[in-house]
Image (cartoon, rainbow, N blue to C red; front, top):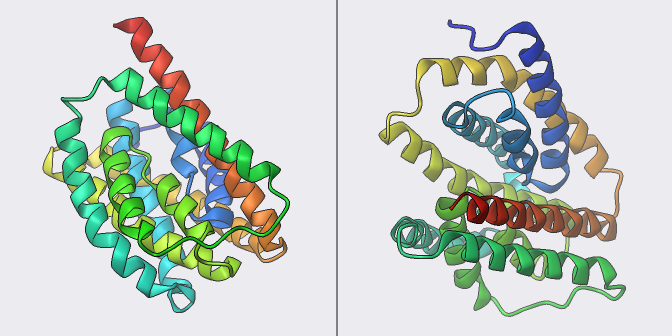
Length: 252
């Protein structure tokens, strides 16, 4: 096995990964929001992205397999096929859409929705299942466009699945599908090299430890508390997209 980190970088990466997957263990998404921006300060982006996808696949599988009995499978049946179509559309749109403006628009939406959800005091209104294909398609497109596909799934499922265990199990199984597509894309494009796999092998114990801690915390918080965490995470993802949009526009 090759060792892609020096000791200092490894210690920092291990701490970042453990913290990020505590969040993943609570909500079943959002680890890449922390791992990718922080680790790219120390490692090349084309190294970080494939490695983090492997970490996400492992964490999603660990949650999805363990808690699959709690997942609401009829919701997934309507979301997964459209997510695949959205992923294909996202690749096409990647070269057609004005990227900074698109990122900024999505960022504003996520921040606005997150603030709205944080301010809500009444029970979350149940929406029609007709929104499932919309959430699936949008999440698939976001995943290939921006590497962040979970927010549309999370928003939809908060309005459909009212048990917090079922919510996390359903979302984690949806994330398995989403990040697996990206893993296949990275493999097919030749980016899944030996040093990325070695980095993954060195960091996955810390991801699983964070996942275990997040799972313990998840068991102690209420559904309302979980929804506040999800809403806060959506705000952070929206802000990160806005920052990326402004940075991209400034470089153009």
